[in-house]
Length: 197
Length: 197
DNA sequence: TTCAAAAGTGTAGCGGTTGCACTTTTGAAC
DNA sequence: GTTCAAAAGTGCAACCGCTACACTTTTGAA
Image (tube, rainbow over all chains, first blue to last red):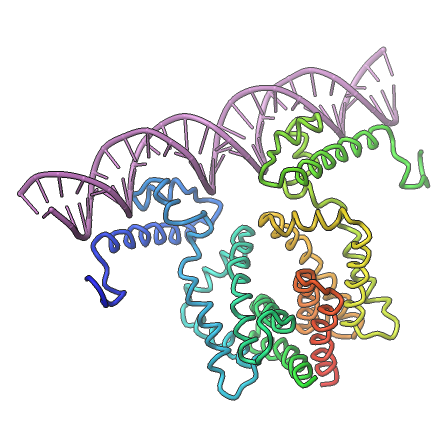
């Protein structure tokens, strides 16, 4: 455990810490899904997880954050979708990424419940949106690199922003795949026209 | 004052109410600009305006709302820009609308300070964005009507959303006019290609 | 003059969040 | 095995935005 050790190896301390964090997150998710976000207080979550409120806030920066755990993977997946897109255009690669994500979620029926909770709770909606749009810069940079544009190119930033917002437009529709086609079709044509200009 | 009276005529009661509201709004704006949003408490604002905290919250739904007064005109201006666009395409009409708005703001140097405050305060950024995107549905409906599409057409909704978010992308840039050209150029081309499909 | 609605007040309280001083646990060095 | 400092966790008090409540004052009109 001195050097060159795999990162997955954790001491008892780290493991216990993760365990505490997990039990808080679990308690929160369960209670939120059972009774709704506004009907559960942080005190009750802490009690359920058998920790103090202070401890809870040492692990999570806010009540909303309790529900949005493990968000780091999303950004890298997003960037990866652009980077390893094969012959596809960038808008189409993003379209495929979202469609695939939607399909993946369809497997987990629990996810729909989670999503409804978020959609129906203003505070969560907002928080989720904020978390999501945080990826804009990373995505814009990836697009710029892939196309050889300057890192702060306006069109790249715009495409990144539009793609991220496209998700909201699409997920509100019944036929998500068709919606994705239309919305990203719009971006695709605009992008292609701009590219050759 | 019985019937057929102009709406601008107000009794003493209404005038006093508006006056109270105004003095609260003024106090809040002044204090926020002087010391920053998070450095001023609602109690202090209420004291400065010489009203109780309870009264303050009877006039404004939240602390953030104190800074965002008079927002109703924006939506109708937005819709009007689409409706009375002459021979221009819808994306170009929106582009012109934003550019013109940016120019109008440039006259008022006070506006830049206001905008910086909003941009630098997360809570205000979010609130402003939320207020702004409220117009999405109205704009989408106007676009749909203008193009003869069904009221809930996905592309119309997407265009409305993108146009509203374009503002954020554009306002972050130094050369706003150029940025507007590029961003709305992207939407213009995508929209035109989609239209004839 | 009378009266009900509207505007405003003060207090008490809730819920999320933080600072603080404190105890307990843990890992590692001696 | 003892020792020690850092890390994790605790409990309390308090702040802040916001609301409910019961209340007084003002206002407009019958």
